[in-house]
Image 1 (cartoon, rainbow, N blue to C red):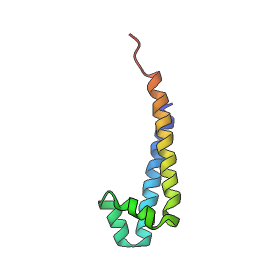
Image 2 (image 1 turned 180 degrees about the vertical axis):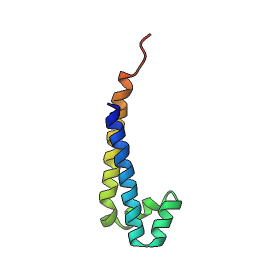
Image 3 (image 1 turned 180 degrees about the horizontal axis):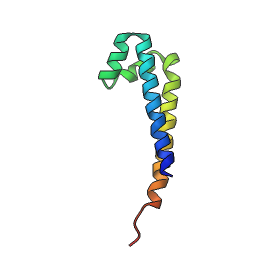
Length: 81
């Protein structure tokens, strides 16, 4: 099930890049702020919900898939004494 975790990581990456592109499409300052300062992306999410909701949900889906994929994979890789 580790492949599911890697698919989730890929979705997280796609969501983050998509959000960054949306920030730069709004203005150069939003994009640079999101790139350099950690909480600016959260402010962008609330200030521009109509533009940021799809990348946000892709990111959330990726995080959920990561937890499921790596969580299920962890059970099968435990060493038996």
